[in-house]
Amino acid sequence: MSSYAQTVSISKGARWTGRILSGLVIAFLIMDGVMKLMRPAPVVEGMMRLGYPLSTSTGIGVILLVCVLLYTIPRTAILGAVLLTGYLGGAVATHVRVGDPWFSHVLFPIYFGAVLWTGLFLRDQRLRRLFPTDSQA
Image 1 (cartoon, rainbow, N blue to C red):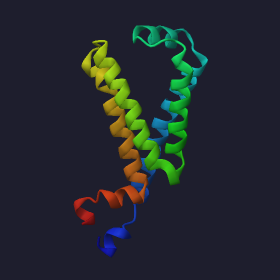
Image 2 (image 1 turned 135 degrees about the vertical axis):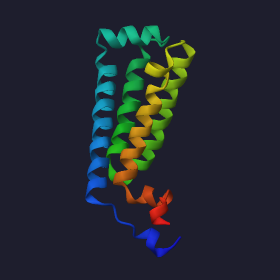
Image 3 (image 1 turned 120 degrees about the vertical axis):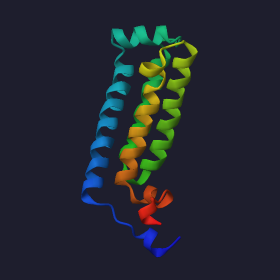
């Protein structure tokens, strides 16, 4: 790897765009995790409709919140993103299994994962070094 690729800086605009995208992802996933712990009626109905026992809601919520915490901390953000990608993959598999509509349910976690990784790519220089763009090569 060239020394240029190791010292590529992130513009203020890119960094702030990444922070905003990541902030939206974090806010949504924290809300989702907390809702799984609180179990309001829509969560109970959703868990039943998707074929999960309500007793798994707490464990799923805790796992989600731990993954979000890892994504939030700059030093562990890449690990958090990898773990959240696995979590979102489980959501895709669940929606495929129950026959949900593709564009609104099955593909939503994939769209969400793309936003999650885009936000991290724009704010984290380590990730940009792993996947240099043409202008960084």
